Length: 301
Image (cartoon, rainbow, N blue to C red; front, side):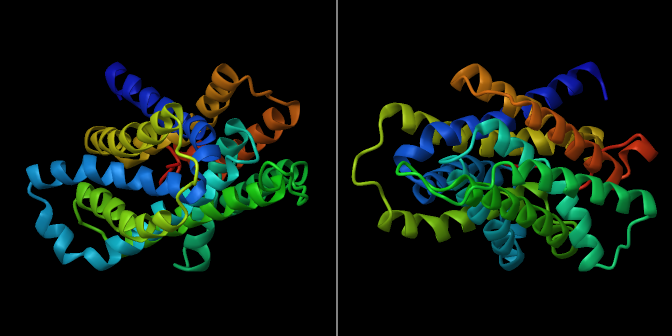
């Protein structure tokens, strides 16, 4: 990886880390469902013209069914879940739970595809999920406040969303091998929009969202989804998937930083300690320490 490509990797991590900040800024006024719908609709509007320009429309037409499933499992439902979590827990904490995506990916590959991990990777799974349990148990109050959902439901939403990402990564690898990445990206956002936009029309907030909330929603769609996909696929083409997915390790750092810098969120000792344990488990479970590479599984948020 060249210096320029390393800079692009850092930029991608900063953008995806910022998605948790923008969800915190927008979810309160839009609600989880409406915010996710705006996000995928805007992302589809960004990616579909590029799909047409690159001539990948035929790939989307031929593989629309599995691409639609990916849109549901890797965008529509996880985006709603993370937006729900943003109503109750900090951006930094959400980003730490998002870092478990490769753990879920390895677990799904084991249970569904029969890819039994080596002993070192099984140890990494145990360490990573142990860190999740320790961090989550300290936040898992299921007594909701008057202003939003409980922290416990927010933690569960983050973990369910991360598990869906892990499943979707394995499904994509099995059902969409050889399909142009841009066709999968654009088609999945279109499918997510088809699912979420009608539901969001029913759940649209009675009070019009403020310009600041709209700005956050548009930033999620244009920057954190549409443009981030393009940057991610550019890195895959130039340095390979393993190197590109090393962004997994960096997203929590930026998620915590943006939450602290923009919202004054507190970084607790538990977040620092157990977040480090989770990332160590991710590294071991995905063989990064053994092969000097990077984790598997798509690290989006």
